Image (cartoon, rainbow, N blue to C red):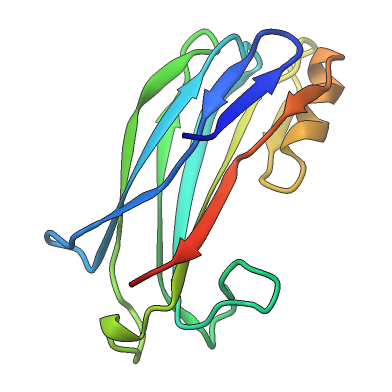
Length: 150
């Protein structure tokens, strides 16, 4: 399990576990734990399945390599959530399921700043968005996981 620690005692865990297919081509069970992120009111966990891995690690998510993608939105109450989100990805490509090389799952979200303005916590800018709102920088943040598929 990957732990995310924030200076303001915010902890979130994020890991994707590919499961055997049941009514979908690929199923990912993603345990998530978020604490004390009072500005966050919704998260989105999105998973992509790709036919090719990049030379530097994660799979390509361009349309030419994309086998499928799906996401789940989860409301966050009072800045807290703990549970497992299930993301079911269907193959919507010309590739066979056996051609899947890897997956990438990421977490983003949205919330409201103290002044009421909307804030997007995007995968690439999650840390910066949180720091801008809270004034505290995350100590460690992992909101993206990827791996090869067998």
